[in-house]
Image (tube, rainbow, N blue to C red; front, side):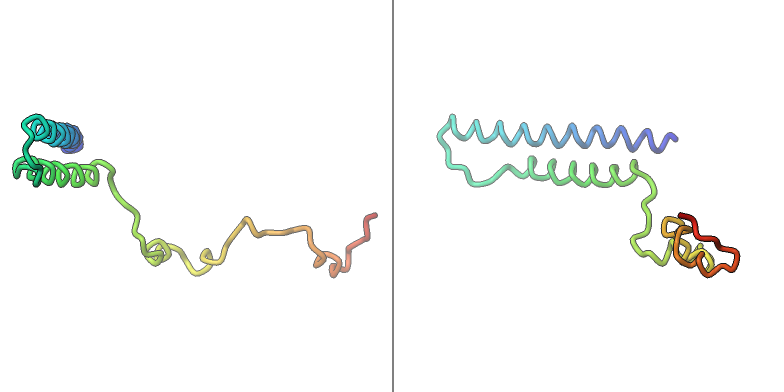
Length: 109
């Protein structure tokens, strides 16, 4: 439980750091316009903050979300028996013409 709380706090800090990096990038762009300098690229500290924050956010989202199901269908099918593999109750139909083959069947009109 404590690890989940720590991951949530890191996730919030990662999002805050990403927002700060975006604000810093916008602020740098405004600074270049005001000083009439040519824009070449973002400073290295903003790029590093963005990449590190993104890695922290991605990792902690995966940790907070929890267990994922396997993509392979065989993992879920291994736990089922052969008898239940083809069992689809939604396809059951009890009102069909096969009942007319019953010797005790009487026609209802």
